[in-house]
Length: 99
Image (cartoon, rainbow, N blue to C red):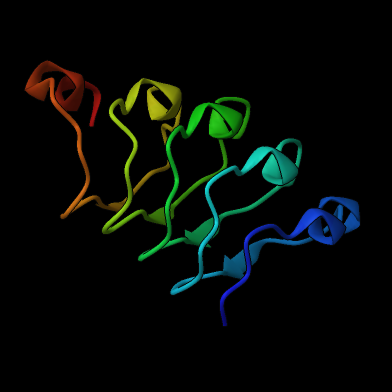
């Protein structure tokens, strides 16, 4: 797939698991408000994970090989068990303290 956006997913209000690995997605605003528990967005072009801020249900998040700089939007994810960020551009190691 080479999707650049997936706005239609925003209407799937009971979606708990989503795999959009290996696309060209840069903006993930369409994920706001979804009750996702597992999210796979590896190998995209995501510049900000800010739209994930409101979701406290995440258990697994794979953001491998993306362009975001900060993990702060995930700091309230108390159920987070697995976070993959290798190949990301996170610059502040202190942001890992909440994990």
